[in-house]
Amino acid sequence: MQANKYLFRKRETPTVIDSDTASDDTTAITLASALTHLKAITVVAGNVKFENEIKNAIFTKEYLSLNVPIYAGSRRPLLGIWRTVEEVHGTHGMGNIKQIKVKGSVENEFASDAIISLARKYQGELEVFAVSPLTNLALAFLKEPTLPSLIKKIWIMGGAFSRGNTSPLAEFNFWTDPESAQIVLNAGFDITIVPWEVTEESAIVYDDEWEEIKSLGTRKSYLFIKANEIMREFSKSKEGLDGSVHPDSLTVSISYDNSIAVKTSKFYVNVETCGMSRGGMLVDWYNITGNKPNAEIVLKADREKFVKLLISVLSA
Image 1 (cartoon, rainbow, N blue to C red):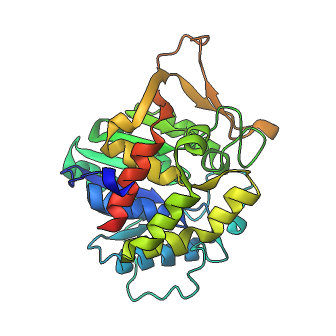
Image 2 (cartoon, helix red, strand yellow):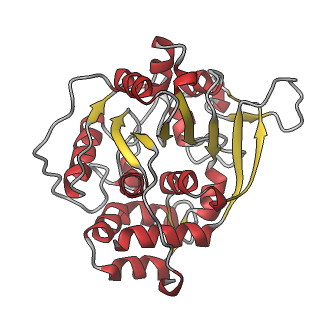
Image 3 (tube, rainbow, N blue to C red):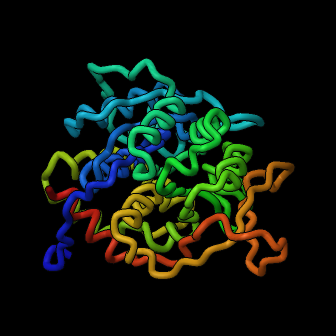
């Protein structure tokens, strides 16, 4: 792997990462800050208790010495029953990092308002990494209906074709707040979706690569290993995967290098909000509805290229 290191250079693109900060979210923040001009971290209800997500975001910022504001957003989804998943990410959400000590705090501005402010400031240049439930973005759109014209791109990690990781059909982010996902998908944004099944195949870090990252001996590699150890064991023992899976990090990586997305196609996509299929991603594969495509879906990704980029960033 080292012989073919990925040579990367930070892009000028202004970005926001909307995160339910735990495990792989910290790695996605690491990538976003190294590969783009990260302007803000916004936090939304999702993976673990909200107060722990806030603390984890501040911890990650301080650990990486980032000069980036953090904004707290919605503490719950719009509607419905939901649950956090500490069994995946650890009690506090940061794997085997036991002492989550922080000095700083979040900004006073609400996350959705901050997204609107940044979108206005960067007028069609801002890209959003939506690697969490879409509540903050939905609230921002409901407050500012012109937001789709102000944001250049939204990269969504969410949805499953059929292999749900939270219900038999639904992926966690869409399952947590399907109403918000439905709002965002139908708002008119330029959207690319990276679904769960693609990440199962192409966001996997196998054991030999895990050991290579562990041997790098950098602050970033240490954070990666310690934050993701419990999630890795869950992926292997509960989901039957052959390594640790990093959906949020793959999404950020595809935004940086579009060639990592080997196959994509545009479809009309909606989200089910009722019953046992709540949170299911509805892809109109055959244009049955007659609706125009509202999202590009990544159907296949280059796992080796992703891992090379990940290791290169973690080694810096």
